[in-house]
Length: 231
Image 1 (cartoon, rainbow, N blue to C red):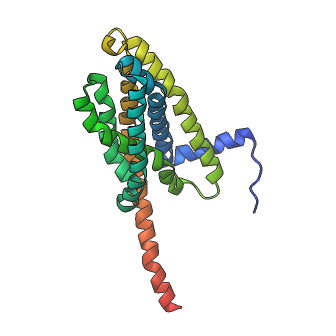
Image 2 (cartoon, helix red, strand yellow):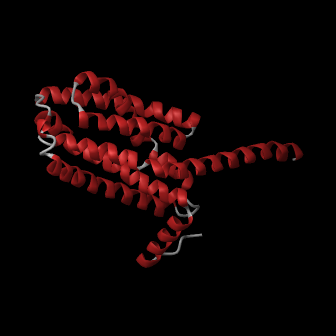
Image 3 (cartoon, helix red, strand yellow):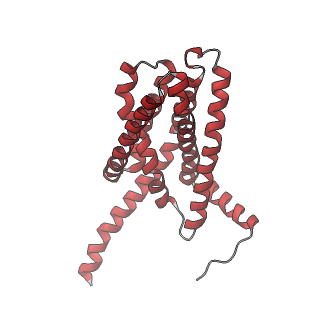
């Protein structure tokens, strides 16, 4: 059966109803906006932090960014494999603590002896956030509403992408007198790390729903051989 065409008001009403009735879906969309906010702030100001804030040359900054990107690319498939084995929401719940804390470190110190050892943890967190969110969302989508929820997923991403650079820019301006050694650019890490840590309260709802779906699949898997043998 083809889906009936909805008016804009009906679409908004449907989305609101789904978010009100499904806490895991609501939690995901808030958490995803915060993850995207962190990534957007980082991508916007990382070059300025390295060149103006830390005083690194452009070639050195490009080298540092290239190393981090390579680590992120390596971490993305690893996080996917680990998510399949241990549970995607469970992995996210554990990793966000390390990722968020790691992002806050450059706010307090720019010493390479401190920052370089945490780079793999930050890269793993970045790879995870780039890889797992949509995989977490897919089982949460109501039957027949995949297109609608995918659109709202894009809306949550866009909201984070819009707010990330804005909030980081405000933080840099406001905290510049306190962070004069980096011309205020270290404040970007407060937004990047803070957004990740702020998403943690939304993870339990995702873990609960993931566990429910896993138990449902296990029950279904146990029934299928019995039906086959009867047949």
